[in-house]
Length: 249
Picture 1 (cartoon, rainbow, N blue to C red):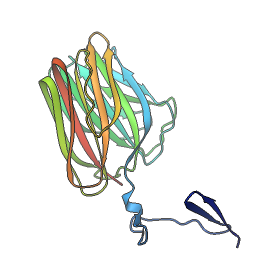
Picture 2 (picture 1 turned 90 degrees about the horizontal axis):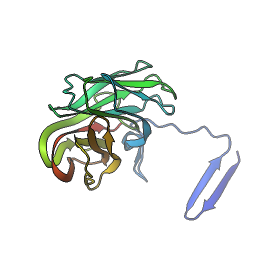
Picture 3 (picture 1 turned 120 degrees about the vertical axis):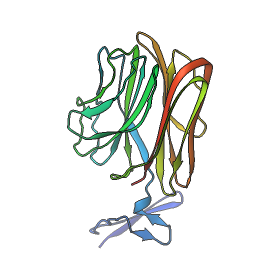
């Protein structure tokens, strides 16, 4: 058996030729470094695609790159003036989507869906969200995340609607690794403030037959507490906001 080592800075990498690669299960742990396979934190893989300004009762997102089996797709839908009552999501490969949060108002609607990827998606596949067909503006974005639990992935959820110059939505986080995903949508064009500590997924205004502004982000947590997504903007506006906390794998 041949052993070799490469010294780079303060880290030594050892390679054992002919050795069998190690595998880990959820119960494996190394007492020296406290590594545990059960505690990989959820992470954002990337944006899958976007759709906006639907002319009918659906927004269709075209997948831009392959999506890995075992990852989780998060779909966010925001509509203006459509009075959507029961939005749904599905894709061209038959993966099952569930609606995890829904803020339903007369002027603004906000929904968050999730799907565990059982059948891989490739570039050119589609993800469709149904909503009211008479919207003045719509925006749908799909993101891929790794490290989210496969079963009972939703730990907590909350959704609110209202009118004003700011909004705040909160949900409890568990003691283990988790990820909170949240967003706000409001009428017309304005610049929302960014919630402190959150990684922003998007902050933009969509102009169709009317303007719709949205901001969204995610927050990785590892201890019990409250995840709060708060933003403010100029001028009183109708808004809808939602948050979902997903358990880590």
